[in-house]
Length: 136
Image 1 (tube, helix red, strand yellow):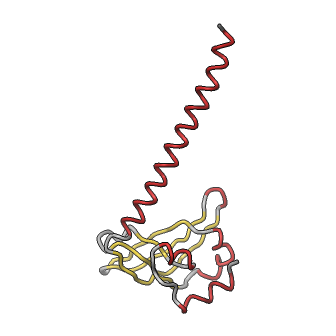
Image 2 (cartoon, helix red, strand yellow):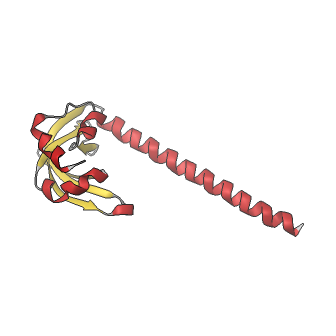
Image 3 (cartoon, one colour):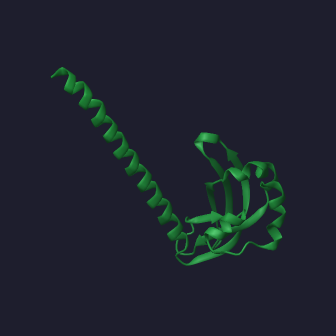
C-alpha cells in the first residue's frame, strides 16, 4: 500500500499544479482582454509624454507615461515590448499617442510601434516612422 500512496501523491500534485497554472493563465488573458475592451469603450486619442522605460527582463518591461484629460494629469505605465529595448534612451521625454477610455481614463495605452497601433485599429502616423530605424 505504501507504494501506491507515493505514486498517487506526485500525480495528484502535478494535476493540481497544471490546473492552477491554467486558471492563472486564463484569468490573466481574460483580464487583458477586458482591459483592452475597456479602452475601446468610447476610445479617445491624445498625446502622452514618456517619462521612463524600465527593462527588467523576467520581471517585465514597463513604459511610464502621463497625459492630460479634463484638466487632470493621468500617470500610467504599460507593458513594453522587447522591441522597446533599443528605444529606451531615445523615447524618454518624447510625445506619443495615447488611446484611452473617455469613460475611465485609467484604462489607457501608449502607442509607439506599428503593432501597438494595429492592436487598437489606429493608423500608424507618418510622424512616428523615425522609431522604425531603431527596432528590428
